[in-house]
Image 1: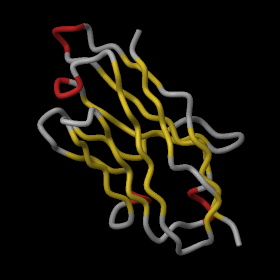
Image 2 (image 1 turned 180 degrees about the horizontal axis):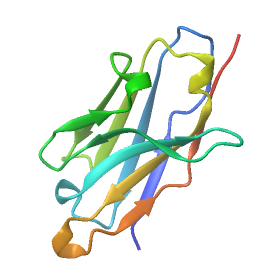
Image 3 (image 1 turned 135 degrees about the vertical axis):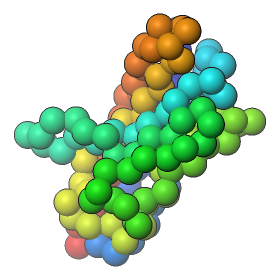
Length: 119
């Protein structure tokens, strides 16, 4: 059973920073594309940032220049560094792992971590 465990969510003031972590287990982590999604109340879950097995990154427009996704294959962990946080970044953040096509392209999800940006 694939496990993804997020941590790092918290209450932070506007302009502050947080770093989210997602530790993966029971997968060959280096082969998986990883991503962070978020879901605010009353809204659909959407992509925040992703990183391929080769290290290529992609960001939704609203976080470009503020958020950075990275991965440490030795630690089976993906990170999301979030700077200059805004109230509209408030959401539950979910870690996603997608297996390579040869393994079925299956999506796995963590349980989510709450990020609240408020003064």
